[in-house]
Length: 59
Image (cartoon, rainbow, N blue to C red; front, side, top):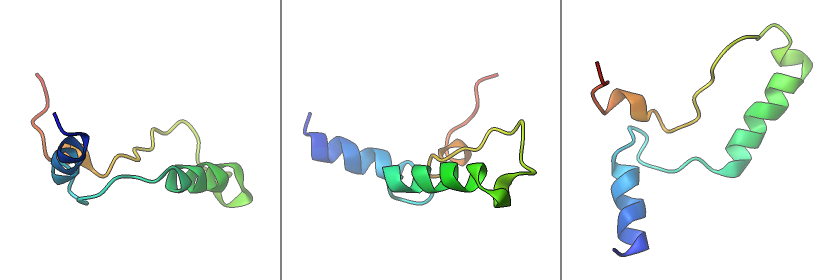
């Protein structure tokens, strides 16, 4: 398989139609570690392009 084709196919499967950049994940980490994120605890924060809305969940 062509790697570029697979990347495009995966991106189509996300509601935002793009990949998440490592810098965006780092921005979230910096926010959570800052004073602005001090009241956020015990949460799961998905940084995945909103893929969970596009595929049915297993039962």
